[in-house]
Length: 348
Image (cartoon, rainbow, N blue to C red; front, top):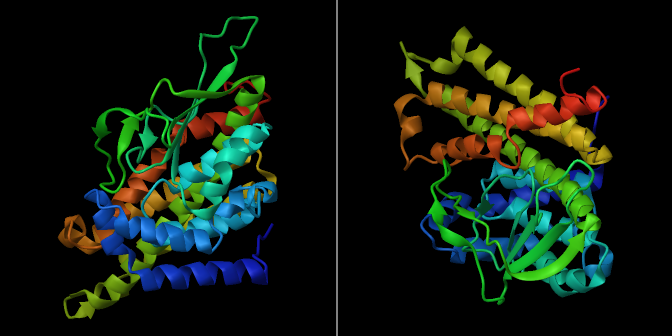
């Protein structure tokens, strides 16, 4: 099956690519990594004006969504240009508030997310132990369970809000990430209780799928950027008087990377159409592994310069590795796919 974007979706991708190309993102990424959020927030506002964050927000709360295919289109471009910040987490927060079925928290928080006025980070079961860029986020959402489940009962999940003027925030200092432009912090265990009950559990499960879809799209964009940069580099770098791109072994490595990325693309957009958790998990594995393999190829073909922090390639190399395990490791996502295929038993 072929997944082709319609003219409006292609125009949307082209407009974001033009915006981000003009923005010259490498200095923005480096500023974010040092704690200077000003260039990143300015770029965030421009992305919001383009409708990126409104894609996950229903029209009732000043959004245009939910539109998962368009969201995937947008996040491919965000990954291609290495845009920093809690992009996936803001979309996840918007999805979580939308899926709750309670108008109070949604009406209070969603318009600011759609407009780009507020950045969000979120902690979900299955999403990992840390939250991303908590010190830069205005809204911190945490879903947890107050007690361990028993054989006969499932504990009601709770949704807490911290940050955004609530007087509480993340705990501890930031943990180092493989990507210098990403900071990881333990979520705050308390804060204002927004909701509790089984509907929070259901909303969190759907939100995890959206977070994984956006991460997969971002990873695909990172992989495409790495491939493009490496193709250009091997045309310029010479050995024995000829470009190394003319060597058969180099061509094979780049072809393998291209094939892996192009195989991931239909999985991504197929998952965006179905939004089935197993489909999304499969797309995340394919896109994350393809981007990571492309990063390894890019590093090998660039040689020692690829390790240099001052060289822009490094900004995408580290992001490919970080996104590979963000919102579910390859093993966790494969287990979800196997569970769905085997009817609930991953050992089948």
